[in-house]
Image (cartoon, rainbow, N blue to C red; front, side):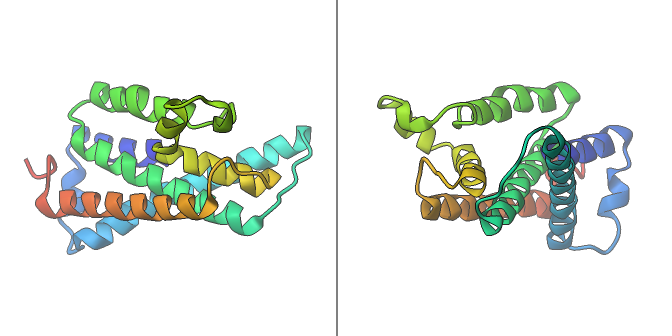
Amino acid sequence: SFANTTSTMMIGKVQGCIVDLLMPPLSASELTFAFAMGGVSRGVMVAVVTLAAMSVFVPLAVHSYVALIFYALAASMMLSLMGLITGIWADKFDSMAAVTNFVIMPLAFLSGTFYSVERLPEPWLTVSQLNPFFYMIDGFRYAFIGHADGSLLVGVSILLASNGLLWIIVHRMLVNGYKLKE
């Protein structure tokens, strides 16, 4: 999701064809929706293909399909919107790569992806719980194995609030033409 929306914006800006997306009589809300849903679609498709490929080698059981669908959509939306913000903000591919390498990857690796945050000492437990990626990973963990390190209600709330805030930021960037109408 992140790579889809980031590269769409960056390539459009670099090639100068971003104006083709901004000229039609589409509102900033419609553009935000279209770009975000494009990223979500790609993220979900990659997840389905990955799940299918993994199921050939490893027996997969789903504990909660509702949680799996919610977290797949919410996580894809969050990464899609973060990608839009990065793509609009970045002036060159190096800036885009810097966000990927120094923001997205550390958030992903420090979110309990490969370990249980319950075993972390303070203050690292609290720091991990401030990471919105923790709630994405924790939700997927619950969806597959039925165990969560944090509160699912808090996780759902944080993902919804994060997505709402990111949506507003992208919308404002498109309304103002930030780094797009230069």
